[in-house]
Image (cartoon, rainbow, N blue to C red; front, side, top):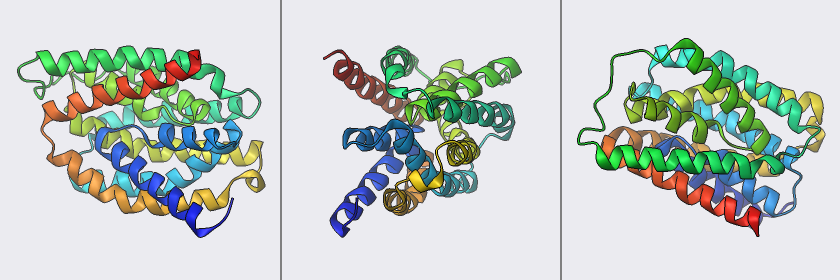
Length: 257
């Protein structure tokens, strides 16, 4: 896989994926990995390559969200350790078992979540109003484990699982959920990449793809963080719910055909 045209195409993919992910809190891994698997890469190699690019992209995105005040630190501390553990276990699991078999199940769950998020923000008069109650430790730990595991196995899933779950809890503003999830994702991604390097070896990574996705994603990250901070809570919540429904409905349809 070489050539400037291919590199440019992958760069555009990285830009678009991060523009969506940094604004809505989901999409980079799912979008990029789906494309790479579609052009013939094995799921483990595709996931490893995408997550390697994500280590830099998520760091830039997380810092951008932090500087714009989109990070809630108490929530960050509740998610980061379970997320890292779940990501490492998922990467180890994917090295021996194809992750594509799990995608229809995960997509069905996320489709329901998307409907719930959309319903909440379409029917509530003040969807931006949040509770002062802190997310319970066991809930955040379980969410981090599951989201991290599915992110590694499916090539994406940290944002699609963590973002709507936290928004539905009603304890956090949407832009704080997106910003915090993006920052935690850096640590989860590093854990996954290190595990992939140990299990499948760095020589099996598609480094040209990594470089192109990285460049496109880094360019988009600050813009996406700014847009997330400026969008009204209601519009952001509706966009997240709608994106989940469209993305996962497509995955389910393709799996059933």
